[in-house]
Every structure is written in C-alpha cells, then in structure tokens.
Image (tube, rainbow, N blue to C red):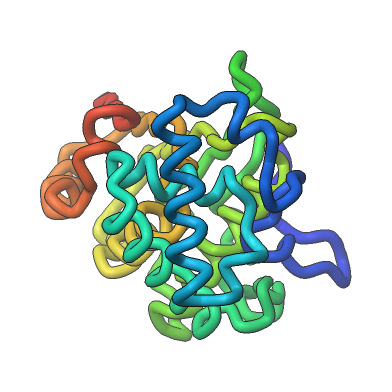
Length: 232
C-alpha cells in the first residue's frame, strides 16, 4: 500500500483535476439523450451565473446532474454552491501539505491499486484518526487533498473510486462526529458521483452507535447505490 503522502515539494493535484477537455466527447458518448440535452442546458445556466463554470468539463456537469436525478435547476444550484465553496475554501485550487501536516503524519489513509472495474481503491484506518488540534477546517482540507489525489489517479473514462473503512481498534478517543460529517458533506455536496462503493469492515458495537448518528445525513442516492456495512 502507498500512504496518502505527497511527494516532497508537491501539493495536491489541482482541484477538479481531470484528463478531459471542457466539452468532453466521452460524456456525450456514454450519456443518454436526455443527459446530453440537460448537460447543454445546465452549462448555459451556470455559465451565465458564474463565468468560472466555463473551465469545467461536461463530465463534471453530468455528475452534478446525476446527483440530482437530472433536475437542471437543482443540479445547477448544487454546482454553483460548490463553486462558491471552492473559491473560498481552496482559493489556490490545491491543498498544500503544510496545511495538513498533522493529518498526514497519522498515516491513516492509503491508496492501493484498482478494483476489477478500474476504480482506484483507498483504505482508511479509523483507529489512526484523532480530532485535529488545529480545528475542523484543517481536517476538511485533508479530505479535499485525499479526494483530489484519488480523482487524479482515475484512468480516462473512470469517474469513481472504491473505499474501504477499516474500523478495527476504533474507540471513543477516535470518535470525531463533526469531522465525519464534514467529510461526508465534502464528498456528497462537492464531489458528487465520485464514490463507487464503500465497505465498512471490522466495525465494533461502539462505532455502530456513532454510525446511527451519521446515517441520517447520508443522501438517498448514496444509501441506495453505494453503501455496504459489514460488521465483525
């Protein structure tokens, strides 16, 4: 396994890193006729509201549409909220390792090859995570760094990753409800349709109590399509 640590002197990949041109042919090739039409409608709408929308590719537009069941208005609102967050939270378009040194030092997240569908695999060890002494925003930046590193490893034509959360050894000292909810928000609201599957393994009874508090905040698409819980 390779720990989620940047190479010396390097920051994370640029936010929204992709291998595609803005109007990506792959998006049109793999899209339904309805999606093709709505990608065009949504692009026109969001570009009129925020000119920086012109820099994103059709695959990103499609991910937001799919996250809102192809409702152009809802997807556009979600996307414009994402852009506002990106400009304020990650103004340099990438996260510097110096901003997340405490979380990197915990070595709690690794990347390990790809699954049979070609999706990058990440493994997180919950027992290695402790609440960030520098505050919630520092941990959120670590989450952004991790997601962007995963996205940068996706081969052309792949948009999702697979995650394994190993809860073995987790105790209340590792409990960080605000951090978990912050990570969930970043994944669902700002990186929609990126998670392919989540496996939770070796979950002790104590963790399941915390999980019950998190579960209501998970959107229906994630519950229905991606989430799998495994208990020891």
